[in-house]
Length: 266
Figure 1 (cartoon, helix red, strand yellow):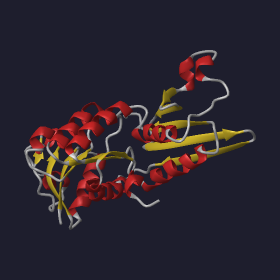
Figure 2 (figure 1 turned 180 degrees about the horizontal axis):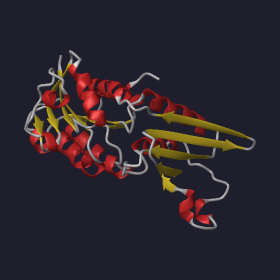
Figure 3 (figure 1 turned 60 degrees about the horizontal axis):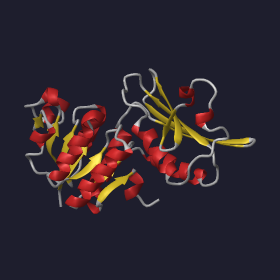
Figure 4 (figure 1 turned 135 degrees about the vertical axis):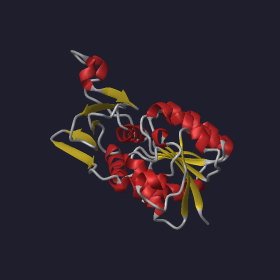
């Protein structure tokens, strides 16, 4: 059985790599794409990939006129939720690669997904090393009561923290709340220097040239410290490999599931 896919953000850094990866599969078919500046062309013409014959549309609404099994969201945080909800209303399952959605956004999306009987697989980062970072950090949080997250990204990234860091904080909150020796509210001096509290964890976001996406969680105990870190390279290929898996598995889910490990046997 071939799954039909609509890809929003199809000419971006991650989206274009995913589109090329889909073109090499035999069980996935890209039937529509969204990229406002390239609307009216075919995706293959834009990416130099003859196997991609999907038309490019200026809007998600127009792209969804073509029925699809799976909608992949790879655009901007400001528009991602509206795109996801529109796809669910059209009866598609959804894979989310866009970062910046909040816990409250996912509660709203989950309500619609369950009403429609569709799955939403939201991955702040599709890389396998991120999946392992999350799992190792959850294990550490069961034994170590103090931690903080440092979120690194390139200087053009407008959302903070990254989806990778936001998802990590959320997952740690499901294990336990951190127990800082001095509560953030008791900080002497500018409280902002202690970072932002995200799902109960202090997160510090750096935006500087030379970074792609990195996430680091530091656990501390008396006389010992554990650091777990993920670093992205310049290629989007690790994200494409994980996204292909998500596309193939999302139709086995109902409601919102966060993290690629939702469909992995770990």
